[in-house]
Image 1 (cartoon, rainbow, N blue to C red):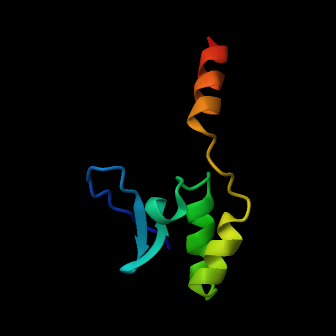
Image 2 (cartoon, one colour; image 1 turned 180 degrees about the horizontal axis):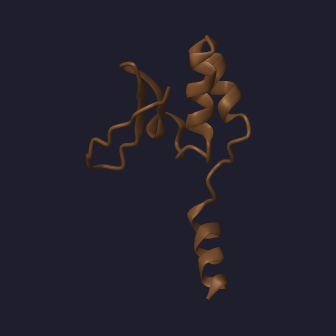
Length: 80
């Protein structure tokens, strides 16, 4: 029993994940990319029968807000 995925290329920074035709993660809505394993946790919760909103909240509760551009740029400079 395994999951399969399909990449549909697009432009404009769109990153969305659907499961059985239902939108389960949207970068536009969340204003961030998913954290490591967040989508996998979300899929597992949904497959266990957890309602979508509850699964999204539970899977994303450890997700961090993205750093501001300034902090990201400073971190990049300091790595050199």
